[in-house]
Image 1 (cartoon, rainbow, N blue to C red):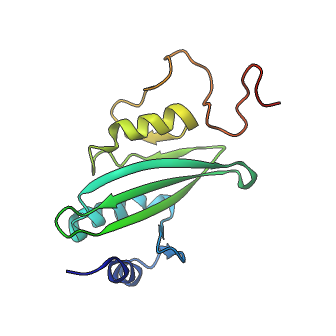
Image 2: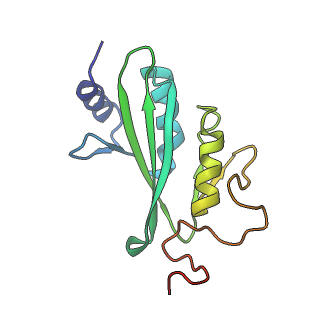
Length: 147
């Protein structure tokens, strides 16, 4: 059994396109996301997507999508991040890899407007279907709210 630090180091050696920050979070370019995530599941037994969320970095004109993944068999965890441009917020869906991404990607889509291409049912999950806008975007305007 390898520990989290050894796992991250092994990933760094194998995938030359990833970065690892001081918190051992793996940062993956958007265009390599599916390839990397599939390898995590197939080669490293990271079989459970615990959480998927996103953050709006309006000053940097990007969203950051964060995936927390666990291995139920080996007991390690991994945080993976990728960035997407605010002007074209599209990322490939990880639903084909982890079915648990279904509702989580819909929630991120609903609240931030990030489009997960290839998702089989990407529609609002929390707000009415005819609701306009994405209320967790920092530039979202609501009546009586931000100016």
